[in-house]
Image (cartoon, rainbow, N blue to C red):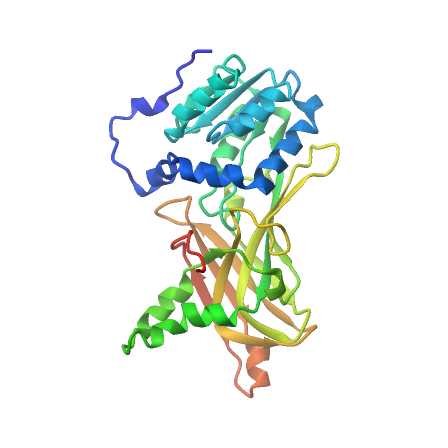
Length: 352
């Protein structure tokens, strides 16, 4: 099916900005290989579609940020009447060939361009599918584009996959790695580089957190209904309470997310917490300036805030505030409160 599928050719200025870099990074096959090999991610989407073929049969589907087209092909195989797949990066060229090679050219149309700038050859779609989630759910996520597509093209009563998502926090003991990451700067080959410690503390770490290091329960700080939420809901500030399940130390607060496919006849959920099989999202670790000594049953209270970065809305600025008064009182100190501000740094930083 032929439509005007290359909105990007209308832009004469090809100079990459920080915003464009997000899309340029998805032009490289390596990131798609990583996502496709993430079986928790890919098989959850496949299960949510194949177990609900009656929802897809004869329907018009929109895939926002289709990448290689894997979700579009799932939808087509489930009986969709037609799938329109939007992809901004140049991987769209390979997606067109993949669609052709697998015999879906008459059912799937790849549209190369930004969701906010392209036109669809139909007025409305019945279902929107998208794997839009980023680190800590919202960092480098495509949810803004999905909400734009929802408001512009989704029919009343239409379906979104996924249709709900949460950010959850927990506290972990991580003394050894914190020493390697933070205290390293105190003595670097005999030189004092401790001025970098503050910067190192402010940069979140994306890595797999072993479940045995989790010392608290989990607290939900954001619960999004993707069918009704707005862009304004992506900026939030929420209180949290984390209660220790054993005597231990807290060196960091960890964020992960869960997503639900609520339209399904049987509940289907994508979970990315420390207790689950690891995904390519892993978990996001925010190291604290303080080491908190905590006993089973005691709680840490605070506030977790998130706002889009002013320079690039796909980056997020996080603020973690925690109340240390009870811990300082144990040591005979005066009341205090410590605020830790985390802005996005190298989101691919990992432990060795």
